[in-house]
Image (cartoon, rainbow, N blue to C red):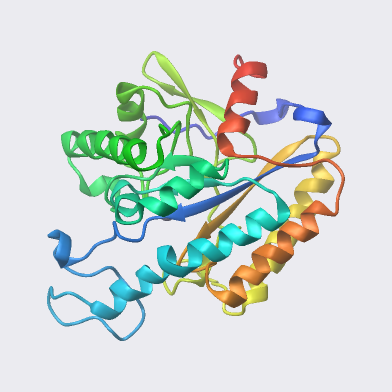
Length: 298
Ligand SMILES: [Zn+2]
């Protein structure tokens, strides 16, 4: 897998979105709880957590598991109410085992007109798999998502991709795009041997994972830190967008933004962005289809 350090370079394309929108805002909800690491599923330890609840050795951490369980139990429904209130559609990056654990939520995603995309069968870094094991994980994720939600995932995002991920997505077939890159403000095509795969870049900045105690410093400590980051990014991209329309990704997690004070910030941001003309709240699959139709040879 080669790196591309030039991208669109000096000739950054002036594209247009449907209805001449200035910015495409993609709300992305990561749905991985139930597929995370725990000895219950044969893993050699519990998921990482800064909470002082990790047992010594490789035992289960009931507390860490329950922190994750908050996501599908409560967070999912709170975020859904906010999306419904504003009539916006999101993309859900779902781990197969997570939606098998809560098929009612999986069906609610597709019944509500939201997009269901793939996020591994297990929520584990892909580089920990062999190539063959990763291929099997992708196939199993597709199967689980189809059987629980009734729809085939057309997009993909990994917990952490491996050097094989793009090739394996092309081999599996049926994917319109992947979101395993953080390298641009617009979609672009990545060369995968003799094929091209559309990339819809994601973001670690406008992402609530900065609430999670971990390596993403500086993190968010107050709920409104997330709103401030979303607003500042939106304002800049919106200003640039009057000449060069852009896209913005908002990363949400059920167990993080599904908590009351953070969910309120998501509500506040959607309300704020809806106050501007020319804002296209788009599912990633809609962005992908638009791009493939209009910019297939960029
Ligand atoms: Zn995720």
